[in-house]
Length: 169
Image (cartoon, rainbow, N blue to C red; front, side, top):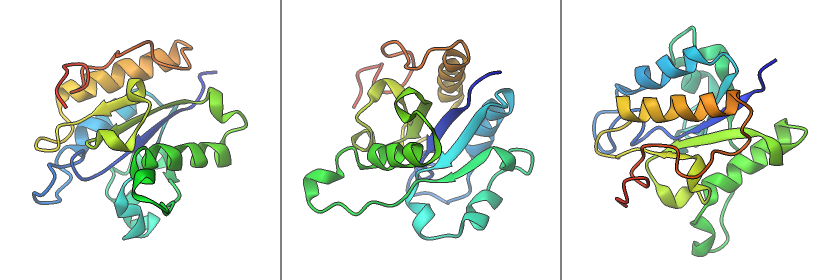
């Protein structure tokens, strides 16, 4: 049996370009990859989780992908400005601790347009906030999930064609 792979996903700058119409025009690219991996589970790690009910968030996804939505990360309030760096990753790790028997061994990655949210850069598919999730990002996600399927707990080095891999920050 293939183990579950979690995708912690932001919305703005991922499902649509940041600052443009929130039409989720890029979501079909993500959904196409998720359909190829029945073991993949999406966990919403977007600020939208604090504005909308889980029912409304899930309704944004295609009906056949909805069963692969595992929930949303908890919201942690930083006490200082320095705690903002890596906050989404800490929220994701808290979610894993609540849902996995061995969170340190969990297969996970993140899709986000804000690199400061994630300290584990080798697990981050960094999107261009002006474009959202692209076909190139879809290929990177596919490679990441194939690695998890092959049994790699952690991706080896920069395996994704993200902005980080191209040294653009």
